[in-house]
Image (spheres, rainbow, N blue to C red):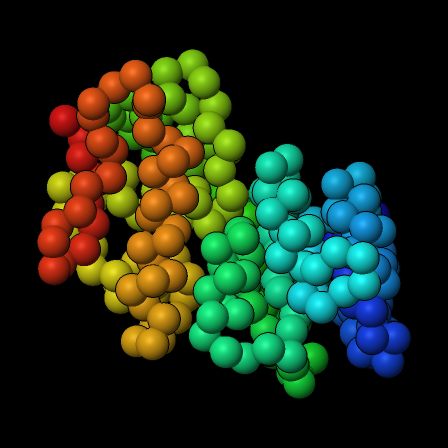
Length: 230
């Protein structure tokens, strides 16, 4: 019998947590639960979850801080659950490293679709021969790994997907709208510019060689971004 997919639910509203946990069990998932920030962070780092459902407003430590600390050590997919619907709150979640965002109240049907979509991104296999190297970076899609020389870069799944999109088409300029659709899976004109720009800035900090003048990701003013293979 195959091992069940494990989901960590970090939610302090017991009514919501009970309903979500019940439905997740019915869908065949194993569920871990935490009702405060510190416990949630501990289980996120040690519980071996395949995906995390993370509330924002938590006692002891909010979801954004949990996510920022988690991303220093783990790239496990994280879906933020929050009653906040403002653009600034969604951007804050993505800036901290969230893979997806579900505002409350939500239907469980929508939530389970998002869970499966994020798990597929992690588990889908690229062709084994799909390997590209340029300007010191080596992309290994089948392992969700990027190397700079012999050094493995620490990237979140969102970082990896963004870099893969650019690296597989070196020199091609992608608009912010295109990147938002290809990497995040949606287009919202109200969020396009800042969300993508912030993600690119964070990605550059992780992949650039501080001892080199070469920039892997270049900006085409007024158009978007492209991967510089030279």
